[in-house]
Amino acid sequence: MSHTTTLDLARLGEVRTDWTVDEVRALFALPFSDLLFHAQRVHRTYFDPNRVQISTLLSIKTGACPEDCAYCSQSIRFQTGVKAEPLMSVEEVIEKAKAAKAKGATRFCMGAAYRSPKPKQLAQIIEMIKAVRALGMETCATLGMLTPEQARALKEAGLDYYNHNLDTSESHYAKVITTRTYQDRLATLEAVRAAGINVCCGGILGLGEGEIDRVQFLHTLATLPEHPQSVPINLLVQVPGTPLYGAPKVEPLELVRVIAVARLLMPRSYVRLSAGRTEMSDETQALCFLAGANSIFYGEKLLTTGNPDEDADRKLFARLGIEPEDACARAAGAPQPCEDAATVS
Ligand code: SAM
Ligand code: DTB
Ligand code: SF4
Image 1 (cartoon, rainbow, N blue to C red):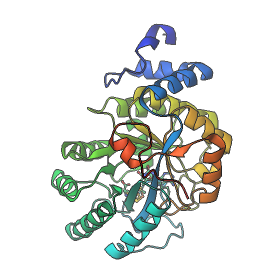
Image 2 (cartoon, rainbow, N blue to C red; image 1 turned 90 degrees about the horizontal axis):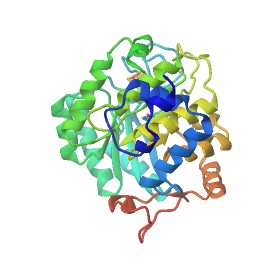
Image 3 (tube, rainbow, N blue to C red; image 1 turned 90 degrees about the vertical axis):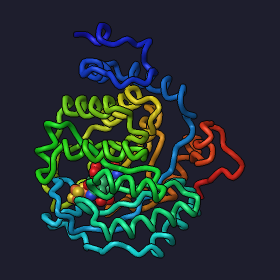
């Protein structure tokens, strides 16, 4: 079926969870300039195109993870040279969060290399969430699988976002991870949603997937009962020692296409250009922002791998006329800055 018969272009911009796989395919098949035009048009109906939300990431527990995710430096099964570190103290996390806030981050994301957190670990993380919130920052955590009770406990602590990625299509997933299933991931997402925590859910490009896997992955995200409020699109950071080291690289224009399709499928969600920016040119990143990406990780480290240095990001923002989004403007639902607007410094 040609894209003109499958797609009703006049409906782009509607927030829908009833997308068909054919419609997603048709979006991918649009000529690049048409796709970018529609993505930018829709982006502007919900967001200020010159504002990007800034998150900072901290690995609060590193390495020795029992899972076998074929892309990950932190799995205990692969020799990657990542040094295992125990769960950080609450004090250490507060110091890092203060530093991130001073640099303009409005959201502080805490990542732990767990399959799922144990009660004692969760109790300590709950203290971290309360403390980071007390600094006036939004909080996000990614701790692996959660039960509905654990999700409720995190909500009660004041957690704003929970990151839990579907990574790729259901059929490709089993080729990348064998220690848990797609259904396990969906169950945690349901627990998080039911607890009233904002869902941050996306995936990784460059896992050896085909275009149909990208179509199905985005279709799954866009047909969840509610769109994830935040959709991280990571480009695989290839880590020596992991099975996916040396996998075929993703073409930059394909990344831009995925961002644009995500923007059109989930018009009100933040689309985060996540891991992999050190490998991207300024031009690729500019095209991603044009396609509707409106969030990044800022700071020189992700969890175990590098991110562009702060100076490079400041210069890129200045060249593109992009300003960091301020948390209070977003809370008010307005794209304009409010009095204590943050600056990336
Ligand atoms: N262990 C928890 C889990 O897997 O849900 C939380 C931390 S895990 C590192 C968070 C996410 O980071 C993964 O779901 C994956 O999408 C992403 N990720 C991990 N390693 C990556 C890599 N080398 N390149 C790109 N993204 C990666
Ligand atoms: C997500 O989607 N990307 C972040 C965050 N969620 C936790 C993680 C990226 C990790 C990149 C590889 C590393 O630094 O180890
Ligand atoms: Fe563990 Fe998460 Fe890495 Fe998978 S992605 S090995 S669950 S830290």
